Amino acid sequence: MTVASTAMLLCASLSGAVPGGETDSDIRQVAERLRDRALAGSQSWSILEALTTEIGARPVGSPAMLRARDWGVTTLKALGLENVQAEEFVKENAWFRGAESAQVTAPYPHALAILGLGNGVPTPPKGVEAPIVMFSSFEDLSAVSPGDLAGRIAVLNQPINVAQGEEGYRAAARGRRDGPSVAAARGAVGFLVRSLSTSDSRLPHTGATRYADGVARIPAAALGVPDVELLERLVARGQPVTVRMNLASTVTAKTPAWNVMGDLVGREGSGEMIVIGGHLDSWDVAEGATDDAAGIAICLAATHLIAQLPQGPRRTIRVVLWGSEETGGSGTAFARAHHDEISRIVLASESDMGSGSIYRIAFSADAWNDPRLSELAAILAPLGILPNHEAATFAGTDVEDLRKAGVPIVRMSQDARRYFATHHSADDTLNKVDRSDLEQNVAGWAAMLYFIAESGIDLRGSGPRSE
Image 1 (cartoon, helix red, strand yellow):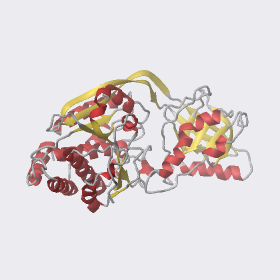
Image 2: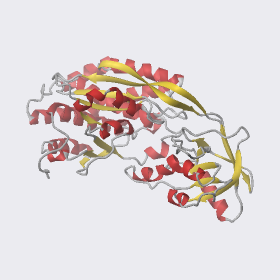
Image 3: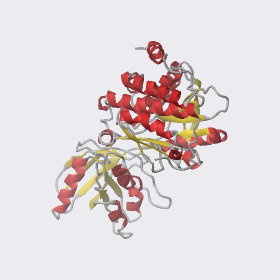
Image 4: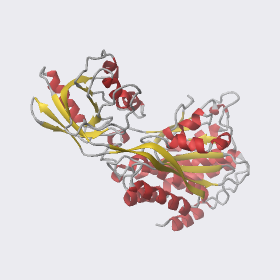
């Protein structure tokens, strides 16, 4: 079904909505209608399918990212957004994967499944071969004295604790991000990390690493879960284990990237806006369906539903397809380019946790002090989304600079148990997305966005807390 034909159906289904939402009850009625219409079917799947099928993997600096930029501009215009633009910024470095391999060379030959870590340096042409030292936690690795890993490859085998939220991932992510520099500071010549995955699949999961200043940069890669467990068992038998790594990544300096954006313009002239979106870039090993084509589809479909109302909301809703989240830069570039607008941004958030159903909503500061938000909680309750009165401290990498500048945020927490089984891996494909969960996300976002955009509620928080 085309965007135009879907829009006609949406207009018909939403025609009973009260234009303008002059009272709180009117706003609730419209938000509930949007919620229910999303559950019956939105544009989300067609947007998701188009991005993953027509563009595929979208690493920064690749020809695919140029196609993704143009796809974004075309799609935003087709969905009826205004002020559509591809805002260019320059990344200091774009990282590209080359040929990669690793194998056990002693006590017997065995090929290992690896993926180099983003921003990682290559090995010498003949690779790096050395005995390994196993660590079960980042803290254990950090406790090693300088020089104790000289001439060794450090292997970090820290699993993710499976949880509904992302707590397990965050706890283990430091090892991938900072592990190579910690190991190098203690003399290591290479670093391998257990994939940040809740799956038992042998497919490794990549992700970005970050080298510390003043420390040697050593090659680093993620290991498939069964392979790192094999290394653990071999070492436990008390015999020396040697591994050879070969990584051939390259870096291109001063690479252009783009934040693609468009507005559902508010009907009042205050200029106040809500900034939402997902990131357009992906890792190179798959089509990035859950990370983060799904987030783009959710935010665009929710905004498109609101655009079909007989009268749009008071505040502008700006949807941003951030162009470099995985290896960094797009959120900072957006905040800098729109510094003069920050005081008018009343709320910001990013959908970047796949399509798992939303189970909780949290705002920054004391937004729940406003008793009107109890109406929003009631609207979201049939979706299984419950209010969290603890202040949100994170709402996506690309809105971090906005949050630090004082912009209120909203965190739509998703069930992450399936997401971390596939993201950053070759398994991040369209068939991992549950369509009904996707529409639950759209329903939650559409209702929340309309409520905030129409009500004029101040999310910076004030007054007594409502229970």
